Each structure stands twice: as structure tokens, then as C-alpha cells.
Image (tube, rainbow, N blue to C red; front, side, top):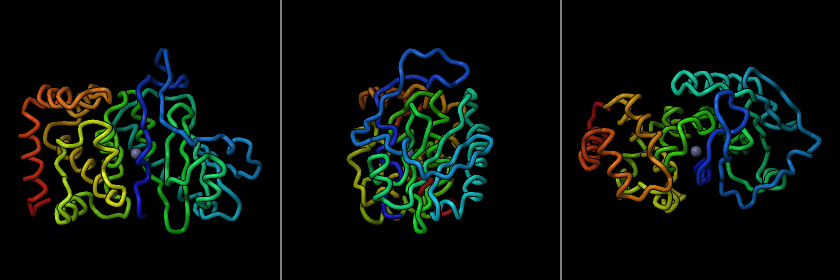
Length: 275
Ligand SMILES: [Zn+2]
């Protein structure tokens, strides 16, 4: 895959849980910046459908997704179990709906863009370009949906958790391998430089896999070094509206050492031959 699955996912400005969660009071919905999003897919008559315990999958006849649908169901149900086991979200009433598009043109026509994968927060659905070459399934998009009870963290942190849940980069290589490759290319891979949404969106698309890997490796480092509980405490508090200074202060408050010290520990781990 040449680009990130979800560079633009979760580009939103606030809100709380969608109304089908069982244990929350709704005051407003999530906002996502989706300038091209259309709902033509809802009136499309040629969907085939398969339903499992936690998902409804829509796909087209003769497509790669139709061929793989039993495997897709198995992968997503395993992902669901893994995410719920770790994040303990309130149980939603509604199943997650997946729409699989066989080519970029069909995807653009039916939902507005040709991107690989996108979770729509308010609609509890995921749109995927699924071809013989690119099969972006697994825990990434579902983590965005099932972590909504934790709030909407900054993109670097939210994408880090989503790709950490996958456990490896989307080409199957380890996140650390990509981080080391990025270092070799001279990219700025200091996690302290990606504190605000703007910083994240300015990272170069051609190296998306390296920046997603950096975010995931940083997440793993924080969880392994401190604890999942401490990390989640940070995740819940770090907001997209925060300034750089506020995020730096929050790192120090939650992890009880400075962000510079955290980065030094992370870089030592990346350069260690044991990892
Ligand atoms: Zn994502």
C-alpha cells in the first residue's frame, strides 16, 4: 500500500458518544471534516450483505471482498474482541457496518472519496477500498470507533492507539523497522514535534507508513514503560484543542517526567538492538 489508510479519519472537533451507546447521555455528536462525503451508497441496490455477531458487511458481486468475506468476518470479529478486551468500551446497541468498494471510482461515486479506509463516527460505519492489492481490514478503524468513550485525542495519539492495536504496519513489517528506516531517511521522528492536529496533517503523505509507525511505536513505548492505565489516563485528557504547551504539561503531569525525558527513553529503545 502506498499511502495511509486513514490520514483524514477522526479529523474532528469534539463531541461525545453516538446515541446507540448504552450508557451515556447525548448532548452533541462528533464532528468530522468530511467535505466530499456523500450517502449515495445508501441507495445503491447491488450490495450483498453478510451479518456477524458485531458487524454488518456490505460488498459487491464478483468483488475481492465477496471472495474473502468469510476471512474478513473472522479478522474483524477477532479485532473487536481484542479492542473490547483492552479498552472496555460501553457496549453499543448497534453493529458496525462495513462498506467494501471494489475500485476507487466506485468508492468515489458512492461515498465521495477514494481513500483506503475511513471510519464515520456518527454513523458507526467504515468505508473501505478493498482490492486484490490493498486489503485494509483489522483493528485500526474499529479502534477509532470503539475508543470514542475515551474522547477524541490528538491525531498522533489517536492514530498511535489504532495502529498499536494492529500490532504492525500495514505492509506487515514491524513499526520499529519503519521508524528506523525513517531515521535513515533523515525524517523528523521526534514524537514531541507532533503535538497538535496541524503537526500531524503536515507530515508527508509519501512517508505516511513511517509516521503511523512512529505513532504506534510511541504508544507501545508509553504502555510498556508505564502501564495501560497511565497511558489511557493521558489519552482521555489530551484534547485536539490543546496548545503545544498544554500537551507538554499534560505529558509531565500524567507520566511524572518531562516530555524531553520521555523522548530520550523512546529513542534509546528504538536504537536498542533488543527491540
Ligand atoms: Zn486512523
